[in-house]
Length: 400
Image 1 (cartoon, rainbow, N blue to C red):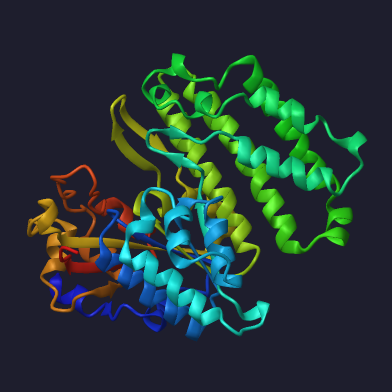
Image 2 (cartoon, rainbow, N blue to C red):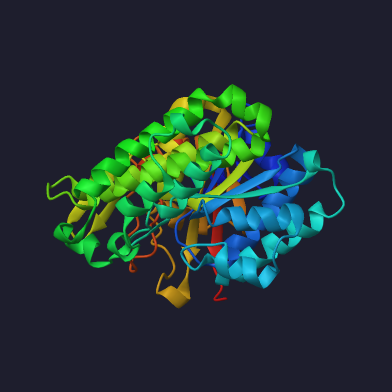
């Protein structure tokens, strides 16, 4: 079996990857089974460079706050702010502290220097303004959307004033209270003010859509896209807060589904702009249902990759990453009867495996899924291999 797989392994490069795909995808998802490993960020960076130089890709999107990501994009396209400022304020989940992300931003800024706008690289975060402990206030997104519209359309068409939004929003700490994640009663998501804000946000987004011909005559396409980003982030955040206040058994499923719905919407907007490399956890990018064990039990939901794949078909591709060892995290040599164990016997490291050939080698009865000794690492599910377009395998992940 190992010999059969060896014959279908390739170098991890853009040319080899494209040969596995039926067409150049508009969205190419590169997953990872754990976050924060510099070796995986370096691999991602090199693959993106090759996609830029050989395949005409111009955008990279990562699992980070979509609104903060605007700061990074401004920096790499126009030089706004310093690199230190962008790394501190342009990322969520503490991603700005990683050397691989810093090098990505530095290289993209250097690449764009002196190039016309049509040839510049773009950066995007595609996650919502969310953390595991809760969600941001919808203030930034709502007020920015209202500001765009109030500057361009007749005031009589606006469903409310800026003062009304401010009154209904109240203080931001009402929305960001970390106790709300564990205790729905602490959430303001179903208060009278939040309910009214949801209606107003929907009306503001509708007005933006209705006024698109006029707005395109008054602002750039990028400005209109940014206004739409604010609008869908506002409605997504208000929906997320609504489900934070839920007390039903479906609460956590609703929350993770709302998050990935926001991700999917942002990815589809990027797809309309041109081909992009997407980097996130495997669970967000896979085509099958995602699962996770949380404090309220196991949850199952359709991730962003599944939602995007349903829309784009072959124009969405997903390459999962599997790992052999992460010894500094207690992940030792994989058992030989697991997918990772089978791949660990291959001599090439790292390598790209044809998922179709790997599925054939696994046979009708997939091997057991590898046990994870650490919450932050999710081994590859053998039953999901058939839904991948390729698998990147890294044998040993060194400590950064």
